Image (cartoon, rainbow, N blue to C red):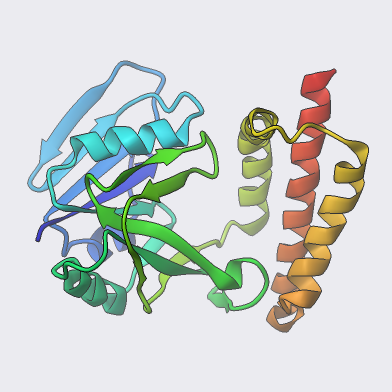
Length: 242
């Protein structure tokens, strides 16, 4: 079976560390957000497409599924890294017949420290599946709905977060309004009790119940910023309704 790796990015240049980590793939497809018309370049087994994102990540990923040529697709972000153990495990599972997709654990790494607790310390994401097994839904925090059985991979995908605070600031500014619109479509309108309670509940859940405190100061900052992000979405909801 063949494998395509898809990278969605806002950068014209992909980090060399990531490129080397996915060199085992039969095909690499990079889709970069642009305000210009669609352009496509090819070099070896790598294709680079410049295509407008239009604030819809599900649409961009579904577009990628139509463009890839392999049997299996692995989605990787431009701030992630595929370790040798994960690469080896992926090469093994794509030759099996029992599953249509696989959940992959993702570990955040902040200033060379893996965050093993809190919300991101228990993350498993459906990032590997057969090309024609399903499609993505929701413009932000998109979900890959795959028909058939889903397996689990043991080796983690590493998420490098050395620009810790600025990353959250960018997420709040870029994703907040899109997320607020998605919540409205899902019949989850703005209410004051959600605005006051949910961000506090998220902090308690991540820092206490999911033991984010074991990750030290970084765990505290992570829990706090995720709480602020939750609050920002509710403020965007309120602002949109006004």
